[in-house]
Length: 77
Image 1 (tube, rainbow, N blue to C red):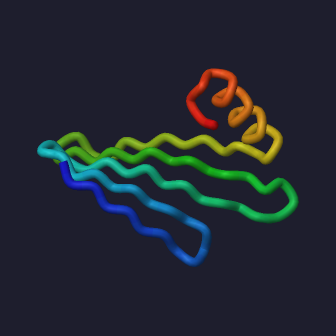
Image 2 (image 1 turned 30 degrees about the vertical axis):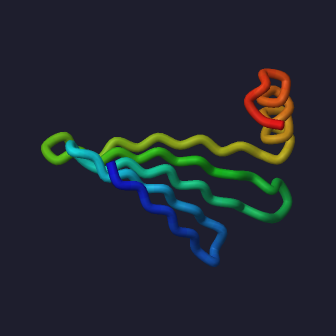
């Protein structure tokens, strides 16, 4: 598996994995402003099956709760 990472000046970071059956992408987009939300999108493109995509948007309060929970679980410091 080959992985690449790139970021844009518009606040988007993309991690892409090329596998033997297709490509996977994790796209994180920052939306600064009133709600300071983060959108996380997962895309999977498998030839013959097409593109499968799902996403979630988390506002600043939700993101703080997520980080707190991850700390409680010992996943992050």
